[in-house]
Amino acid sequence: MAILEILSSSSALLVGAGVVLVVLAMFVARYLDGDEQYWAQGGSAAAALLAEKKVESTQEMIWREDVGKSVRVPLVYPSPPSVMARVRKDITMKELAEHNRRDDAWICVEGRAYDVSKYIDYHPGGSLPITNLAGKDVTDAFANYHPASVYKKLLPTYYIGDIQDYKVSDWVKEHRGLRQELLRSAAQAEQGGEAGGSLAQISEAAKSGDGTVQNVGIKLDGQFVSPVNNQRFSSQKALDLHLKYLYDPNRPAVG
Image: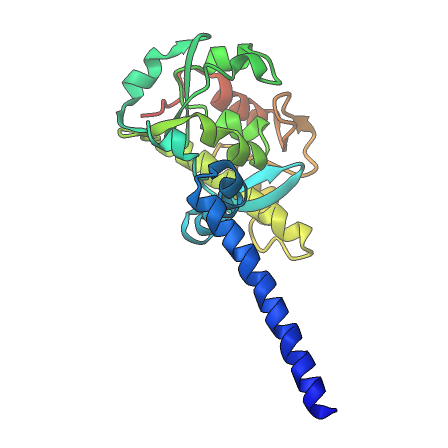
């Protein structure tokens, strides 16, 4: 009986191995026959997943807003191969500024240029915001109105290259640094942690609203609300400075 059981088990193993070999042979045959669509269905998905994981492990990270929450995500996401094949390395701010029309709209987000001419008619916020900001650095406006998912799902498709002479003023660096600190603090608060000398201290210190990081005027319970992004401020002066940053043509320029 023992011999029969061994022979039976061996036969089952051989049959199982045979099925695996047949399936493997089918995959290889279809690949060698050039059935690219069949092969790519799994391959492209796997490649995209691997690329995303690689980005998350090697790229610079940044805080962004996503549906009311602060999330830590890669600064940039990889573009499709078809996009990367035509990426340029010689784009300048001067050239970006020349593409400032509805039918020829380039924008700059964090030093990277995007040609959104073909997307403008599909923009949920209408064509006017893009038309008004075409040819400019829209980094801060973009962050105010778009969730983190847009940076991942939309921007990579329209990427055309990095801007070689991209620079920002100290004013802008300070503004963006503060935004990062507030988002980080919000994430920490969401996880039940202490604000740890960031959001709490800024709110406590925000008395004069003089525009500095230490005294920026932002308060969680501020009575002065921005009509642009609903941020709350401790004083009218602080709110005025906020609006000045957004709209005053005489504020320090990018570049």
